[in-house]
Each structure stands twice: as C-alpha cells, then as structure tokens.
Image 1 (tube, rainbow, N blue to C red):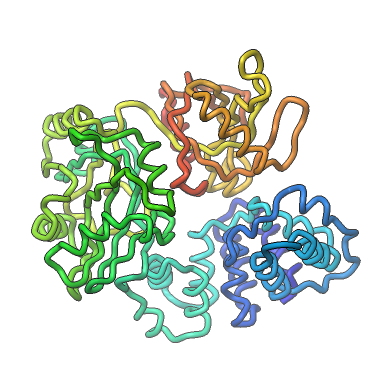
Image 2 (image 1 turned 45 degrees about the vertical axis):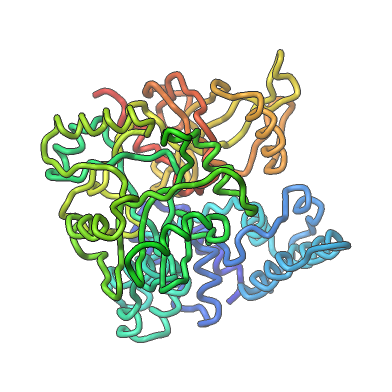
Length: 507
C-alpha cells in the first residue's frame, strides 16, 4: 500500500470527532492492507511504530529535508524498512549513513508524507487513532466480535499482532489468545477520587490498600525462570535480582503477580521516589535494594485468575506471598477506609487504592472498580515547552509549560495535549540542570525565551485545584502548581486527562 493512503486516512480520522466515522475510515484502510503490512500500519496508526524511537532528533531531520516528491511512490513497507535501517545503523561513520537513509526517505515522500515521517521520527504523531478506536476498527474490518479483539489485544500486549490474527486468522485462533506466563499483559489502571469515603461509597465493599510510592512491576514465573516487566511492558529482569530471588522462594511453580517495588530505609520507611527510580532504571546492580510488594495475582499453577473476583485473588495472594502482600483491609465502612488511609500516610505512603472485591482484572483499562486516593491533588502531566530562567536561574530552562491528555479531541486534536498552566516551583538545582540538558535534546523549535519539546516527558504536579480560565484551550488553569518529580516510568499516554482536571471545577 502507498504510504499516502495511510497518511490521508490519519488526516480523515483527525478531522472528525465522530467515533463511528473514525472507526469506519480505519476499517476501510485495514481491509486493503497486505497481510505483511498490518502490524506496521497498526503501529503507525496508533502512533507506536514497531521500531520505537530510532534515535533521530530534530536537527538531523531538518538537515535531511528534501524537496517533496511530485507523485507518491513510497509504500508502508518502504517506511518500515527505512526505520529498520535507521535503528540498526550505529558506530563510527553511522551519522553519514543515517543521514543518507533519511534523505532517501524524504526525497521519495510527498509533502504530506514528509510531515508524517517527521512525526514518526520525532515521536510527534497525532493521528487521532487512539488504541480503543483502532481496536474497534480491527473488529469492524475483520468481522470479529469487538470483545474478542479487545481481550486478545490486552492479553497479548500487541495490537498489531492481534490485528494480523483477526484479519487473516480464524475466529477460533483469535479466541485462543490467552494469558501466557512469560508474556506481559497490559496492567489494570485506577481512576481517582477525592477521599477514601467517597471511593468506598461508590464501589461498595472494597479492599482498601496502601498506595505505595514505587515502580509498578508485573512478575512472571515459570519454574525457575522469572521475568519482570514495567507498566509499559519493558523487560527489566536483569535490573532486579533481589525481586527474582523473592519470587523464586514462593511456594508455587507458575505464577503472574502484579505489584510495586520500592526502596526502604533501615526502619522500613519508604525512601524518596527518586532513589527507587534511580535504582530501578540502572542496568548495573547498585547498593540500594528494592523490595517487592504484590497486590494481585493473575495466574497460578495452570489456573488463570483474571476472571475471578478480587476476593478470590486476594485469598490466593495471602496464601502464597503473605510477607510481600501490600497492606490493606476489606470493608464497606467509609470510616474504616479513612483509617486505613491515615495508616498508609503515617507509614510514608501516598494514600490508598480502593478496589471493589467483586471486580475482575480488566487488563489495560481504567475504570471505577479501582480508585486511587491521595491527600494532595497530584496529576501526571506532559511537558510541552520550557522557558529560560532569569536571576539565579539564568542559563537554565526553568518555567514548564504543562499539558493534559485530550483523548477525545474535545479541546483540540484527539490524542493531543491541552496546555493547562505553567510552573517553576518545586525545582531543585539538580532538576534544573537535568531538564536544561534533557529538553534541549528533545527540542523541536525555539524562540528567544522558550524551547518547545517533544511531548514525551511526564512530570507529576501537585496542585491546590483548578480555576476557570480563558487563557488556555481547556478553559481551566492550575492553582499553585509545583513539581513533585519526573515520572520516567510513565509514558505520555498515561498522563491525566483534561476531563479529569475539569472535574475539579466547583459546580
């Protein structure tokens, strides 16, 4: 298929707010793809190319700019092969080879294709094809039940592979996709609530559990083989030998566990999040020890537990890993939920997560069955730009432009980010030095006072609330925003939404 056909489809999808129209356009495209093109096309449509980031920055793209081709000739396969070459090219003399590969791609591309390729390379694709819409389009194009496609994608963690199976395989093959020990699944996510009382009143009888200030992990064990994955499904087994040792000691043969890992001090109090993430992100073993805590079990010794109620999964977890289960209490009493929350805060944790005891494990979904509660409003936002500082911050990038995810395109482009405020508060000298270097590496353009950056950096921001404001497209502005930390463990797609922030407005 010509790349231009895919590009024009993304433009159609981005230009409409109708979910049905998006699904129809995407399904029409998917039906026309050659089988070998399906995984590549799905990756491009969902703004997640198969190769990931290939290490090409703005300056390299700008230097490789060529006159657009008059007629389309570049295919989806051509772009895929070009990205493979860019990813594989490294070492002495690689710069010239990468530049030549990029110039060849750009010379073969029409003007719309050049813009699309630039977005692919810089991680700036805004196709309007969120994964939920694209999943429905796969179901429409293949004639398979949407629930079957959605479950296969969640359990395989691979929408491209699921699309290939749905479009070229049988219904039985699609239905056969299940939980596999050693293959990560998308983690279940939590919504937010203002208080533990409100969360319990909304969910009914629930497990009110301490919310740890750590890094999310999913652990798979098959015999003596242990694999550990991040919330983004990256394999980090080699970084966490202490967690591997703990899991091997459990009285099971095969198991899949969901939990957190964090560093503790000598008295068992959580150490700062930055220390956990510094150790979690290190390829070399360091002195800091990370302790695993588990809050769910998805499989044990040949039995899948995804569709069992949480009450059953808790019983299994208590039986196999009591010393490593996250503290919590099952209750329907709001007063008890408040007490557990105070206990969690006193122990140095973030707050609580309230989980309906009858809920199943909905991989990859954020719903009302899991609700997180923090005493301070903190939200994960995306850095859109950064202004140069003044005074003692002269020469350093300081004031952050913050964006919230707009999944539906209610205030802009679907899947884009809506600016909701700025802040320079809470930044230590170390963070100032780090972000000055980092954001220039991610630079897409600049003026005399501001550097615009690729929207890929997630930062946790504490606020006192929001207020109505005509200054920003979403109609709100953050009140007293300050930086808590950067969340290198989170992808921009995990950012909080503009709708979540707008819900803080007083009626």
